[in-house]
Length: 279
Image (tube, rainbow, N blue to C red; front, top):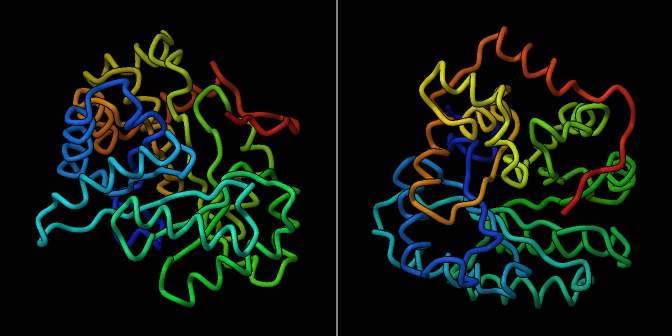
């Protein structure tokens, strides 16, 4: 399923998250093999952040990138700067550190991880400076609610934001009330983190029943649901080859109207404003 998201340049809208990579859950070789498997299966977006393992995730991804053959399509890299580093000087320093750990000169998409005390105008100006220098191709934000996005839209250069990365899954649908429609209307792609929740989704009987119809797992159904519009990018965790292979099956699954209606009945879209879910 190729994405309708223009800045991905034909890449799939299912990527790989790296929140726990490089931190001892599995061996580095297992985690590198999982990422390589994902790339081979067409999961060509890799999401990371300076916060993940205090840079260890970026370092492991950098090792994988260095081992890729020159002829291979380069993955689309996403990283994030902490709000405590969101001043102009802090952004520049954090970016250089992330780029060094990843072993790249340019990061495709650079996000503000969540809002802090630095004025948005200062952070946006720093992002725009990095973009003008060719050090990043695009920038965005994470964990911004509708009022945050509206404020960002009033900042000089703020409308150049291309992504808002937020928590979104079958059983956390609060963004559908106003944030997701606002983002779609204004050309901002929603990137869904924790698209499988905390593991509870795989036990959900309805998703398992739908999965049985297609000979796939409940997790694949949950990811296919996220991807149904072609305008939302999902980044499930990528720690093991088995999980990666399972996740990739979501690219081939199209849920029918009856199945989508069953999911809506089990987990209805929000009918009122809710606080933004965050991790």
